[in-house]
Amino acid sequence: MNLTELAYFTANVPEMTAFYRHLLGLEPVAQSENMAVFILGPIKILIHHTYTPAEDDLPPDNHVAFAVHDVDTACRELVQRGLALESPPQDHDWGRSAYLRDPDGNQVELTQAE
Image 1 (cartoon, rainbow, N blue to C red):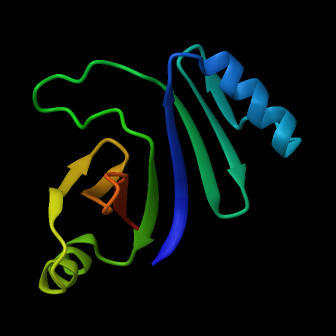
Image 2 (tube, one colour):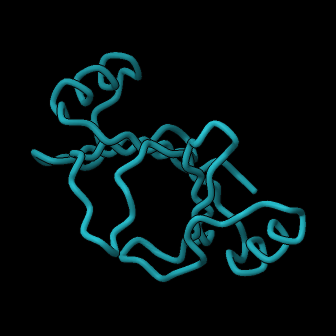
């Protein structure tokens, strides 16, 4: 399991983008009015405009993502260890992912390694 992504949802995409541009000394590799993506070694920092989710959408929660070789297998093992999934493995536009929450309610994504 490797840390692969930090995702931030905000109403202030330009301000967050400027902050990370100055902090990292890097330009985003992708940017629009509603998002920015920075690459820092093997880790992506994603800045997204927050939104009101549709009934079947994932909530726009800040989260960390860990890449795993096989999301389905990793989820089965985590459930066997007593962890609960918030969202089971599913195919999304960005790949196959599953979600759970840590004890403080922070969202954690498991994503299929490329």
